[in-house]
Length: 257
Image (cartoon, rainbow, N blue to C red; front, side):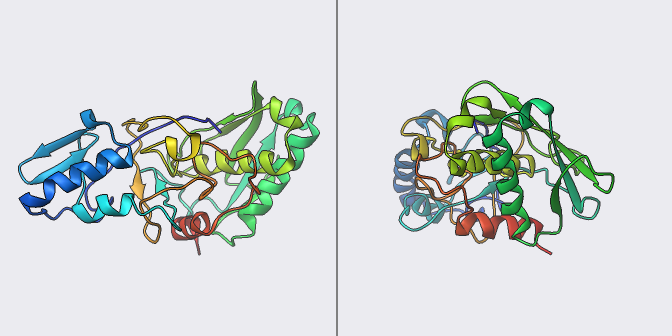
């Protein structure tokens, strides 16, 4: 996973608690909350009685308060594009020969597949090649100890994830975490702390707008804390590599049968 990455484009009503106007007297608290939550002042705009971030994302006073309620909660965001489960019921993960030459990466891929299949989603994942698959994700390597991926297009998951070969000496839990995380992006999950990478990375900024959307998934709060999600921008050394409760809520909301 990248320790820093991607986006903020949200439509009102799909994001933080709706588009109703707050009273003018609440504006100062709302802006203060956004700054405390990590939004750069340059990204905060006031139009009439409404406050926006990222150019087009309306934020209510209640939503700004929820951003600061980090204890015991973790959020999940998705892109505008998702996998079409009407067409995709079986996804092949096809590792390259180079990938399979790394024992720990191979083991991590197996564990990541188990993570997703244990949720009983509308699609299953298998190691490919397999002729019965509706979609394919190629699994290849890159330098370093992170990973990279992309977001769905045309109702299909992103077609490639890349995993750092430096992870071959990391713990199996870390490798499992990184591969599961990159597959999450391929399915349309955004970084849980995209609005403030410092939550998991110790430093960082709002990832900004990139045209793919950052829509709050119902049932998950709008705040973040370290280790609260496999989809945080950075992973802790102590990760178990397993989904958290909010990861499960998000995936079942999007892809549960």
